[in-house]
Image (cartoon, rainbow, N blue to C red; front, side, top):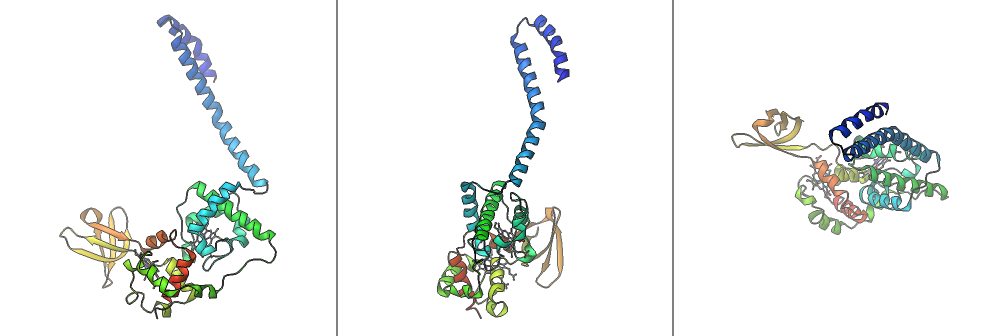
Length: 290
Ligand code: HEC
Ligand code: HEC
């Protein structure tokens, strides 16, 4: 601040002498003001923001209805089929209205971390969500938790009998049609007997999110030969696979063309399309594959 002020008289002398006009001087002055203003604003801004979020944390969480609605919509699309429409627990996801993590969450900090990182080993996929989306989800979940607390009698549970409410024939149509499942699966091929291998919620969890699924890779060599296998290694220089016979191969990326097919991505992409009914119908259908 002082430096700029100290310079002013010298500019003044120089400008007046050199141009004889005050226009430039005015411009320089405004520029100086702008510099001062920005410099003064920087620390002010951040301390203001800090103060704001502290205030929010200490006052009882009350979210604008609009934010809650946005969160509710997103929750129905991405989360409800695991955590239930009301967040009170679904077939494969826990009751969030009783979650201690939710209770101790402030403005979506913890909820956002779970949503973004997922807990893949436990059946919760990661989601790529913007800050506003996290804010909406948190607003909705907190509101549901508050409502659930004030409602006596606790939650309505989801039990295995809910899995039996679907229609197998409708599920089959969805599998072959709108669901696009038949593009990758066959009831007489890979999914033959699936209902013997996995039952109930375990089957549903696998259908929704095959977290242990391996990505496949197709490599086209310089010679035109095509090799497919399970992706075993990939960085910016090397692609490696385990072929059908179980042997490992790798190539320099610049020598080949390759295409990775990550099945989990395809399943995650389906999340926003499923309705509860679709899932129950699919489950009913899969349970006929014995
Ligand atoms: C495919 C099923 C599935 C989907 C979809 C899903 N979750 Fe989860 N979620 C889970 C499971 C399973 C857990 C429990 C993981 C564990 O046991 O640690 C979980 C845990 C959580 C937790 C932590 C609860 C706690 O007390 O630790 C939060 C918060 C959560 N999910 C929010 C969400 C939100 C928000 C969405 C949507 C953007 C979502 N989940 C989508 C299955 C799912
Ligand atoms: C783009 C391909 C693709 C699409 C589309 C797809 N899946 Fe999958 N799915 C896979 C792959 C790959 C796996 C992992 C297979 C494995 O781990 O053995 C998998 C796993 C599964 C599993 C678990 C199988 C097991 O043995 O554990 C089920 C069930 C399943 N999918 C059902 C479905 C249904 C139902 C749909 C349609 C709503 C669907 N999938 C859509 C590729 C796909």
